[in-house]
Each structure stands twice: as structure tokens, then as C-alpha cells.
Length: 338
Ligand code: NAD
Ligand code: LMR
Image (cartoon, rainbow, N blue to C red):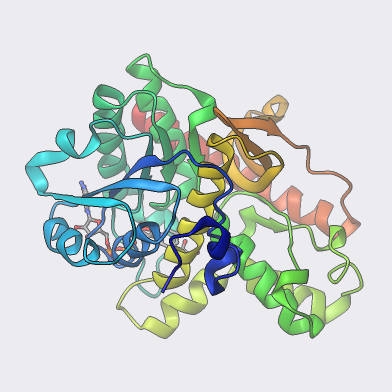
């Protein structure tokens, strides 16, 4: 399906996120590879020309997923690892993507997942600290506003935390914002990119529509509805799946898209900028030291954290609602590690 030639990858239908601008290739691990996100994410990463080698790990099912995905005719090698082989799975890995953990059911918030997912993420981060301390860690497991501080705190305790290497994947919010704005504006999603800042849960998701040429003219009820849909797009999927989980396929797409952006930055491509939830100075003076804003990705991960820019009055209101909730979520994650 995807071309192996770099020149043709740009022309392939997948080119919106599989960009290969440099020759370097990288070993990537997926922890939670047997799950609803992990399986399609592994497939998409197998199709990414910047991935040399894929290590697929889960407490169940990863060797089977690896055998299946390994038949796809792209250059990368694929290995699957069973529950007791986490350390082997992480050997020599430069990028670790973590979609391990339980998803929501209707009526639950992401924070309701904390009790189960906090220890899963902490234990996986401990293993990365031990085996691949220089790896870049991409956290998908919810609640992202808390799991990212848990990963950072765990690495810190092990003496290997590098703030340039830890990312909360908020790309699904960015993908949704572009798609939903396109529908409202009658435009192509190629032309409706929206910067989404804050965190990854309901009111902490702050879309900056005023900074988008198609978004800035949307006002009144249409604006309120669009913002609500971006903030609560996850609930839409949870409700429609009716107890069978949350977004998996669109999340795999978003996870592969963010991974490719990081790999392009690591390979020296200039100007790779996307929102992601990182250790950030932007609201540190208010006791909030993790925040998602546009981040330039470079040779060593986070290269530059961009400020959020000019906000409309409505966005100032959204930000005011975001910050206290985000602070609470971050503190909960930190307290768990402490
Ligand atoms: P799932 O239940 O289908 O898959 C989770 C997988 O994790 C399972 O295969 C399970 O065996 C595995 N797992 C559990 N404990 C593990 C451990 N200690 N080590 C390795 N693997 C382990 O769930 P899913 O739908 O794939 O969702 C996974 C997580 O991603 C959830 O927390 C969900 O809320 C989150 N999520 C985040 C976003 C986002 O935008 N960041 C989007 C969608 C879902
Ligand atoms: C999403 O935004 O779809 C994910 O965070 C999963 C969820 O629980 O909504």
C-alpha cells in the first residue's frame, strides 16, 4: 500500500503524515501493542519509512501482532515480546510509544482511569529508565494530564529525566479540530489546521480557533458547538462504542502522525512544529509545569516551546477554565510518584 521509495512516499495517499525527508532510520517500541490502539498503530508504524525496527510489547498478544504485521512489505524488521520480555523489547530503542492501559466506558472520565493506568505507566517508565534511558517517550495512556507527570517523575527518581524527551500525545485533539472545523467551514482539513493547547481532557483542551483563517470568523452558537465538539470528541466515540472502549483507529492515526513528526525532527528536518504536552515554562509561574502548546521538534526532541500567542476573549475564558483543572491533574500525577 505504501511506497518504499522516499520520493513516492510523498505522493502516496498516506503522505499527510508519512514524510521521509532524511535517510536515518530508528528503532521504535510500542508498549501495549496488543490493544485497540496498539495494533493499528503498529501497522501504521510498520509503514513509516523512518522506522528501521519495531519492538512490539504487551502483557498479552504482542508476538501474534508482530508475526502478523511483519508480513507487510516494508523495510523495517518487527519483533514481538511476551509479558516477561519487557527489557529485551526496549534494548536499543530510540522512541517508545505507550498506549498501554485501560480505556473509558460510558459515564467515566479520563481521570477515572487513574487508579489502573498510573501504575502501568510508572512501571513501564521505570523499565525505560533502566534499559533505554535516552529514549524519547510518547505517552498515549490516559489520563495524559497525569500520566505524563508520572513518567517524568519516575525518570527523575531514576536520575535520567530529560524534559526534551517526554511527550504527551495530544495529536488526536489537533486531528479532530481540523476535521470538525473543516466540516463547519465547508473546507478541506488540509486548510483547517488548528493549534490546540492546554491538556487532554474536556475543559483542559483549548482550541485556538481565532488563530486559524477558517476558524476566526466562527462566532455565537456555532463557535460554542464547535469548541464543545473538539473538547468532548472522545466522549462521542466512547458513547458510540457503547462499552467496547474509546477511540482506537483515529488515535492510531494520530499516534503514527506524531511519531513521524518526532522522527523527522530527530533526523534533522527543520520546522517540524506541532502541539504536544511537555514540561513547559509557559505557566510555571502559576504552578503548572506541564502544558501543551506548539513545540518545534529537533535533533534532540523538544527544540523550542512556542508561546500560545494572541487569544480572543472567548479563548481567554477557555484558558481560565483549563488551568485549575490541569494543575489538579498534574499534581495528582506528581503525588502518585512521590
Ligand atoms: P485496550 O484495552 O484495547 O488496550 C490496552 C492494551 O494495554 C492491552 O492490550 C493490554 O494488554 C495492554 N497492557 C495493560 N497493561 C500493560 C502493561 N503493564 N504493559 C504492557 N501492556 C499492557 O485500550 P486502548 O483502546 O488501546 O486504549 C489504551 C489507552 O489509551 C487508554 O488509557 C485510553 O484511554 C488511551 N487513549 C488515549 C488517547 C489520547 O488521545 N492520548 C486516545 C485514545 C485512547
Ligand atoms: C480520546 O480523546 O478519544 C481519548 O482520550 C480516549 C477517551 O477516553 O476519550
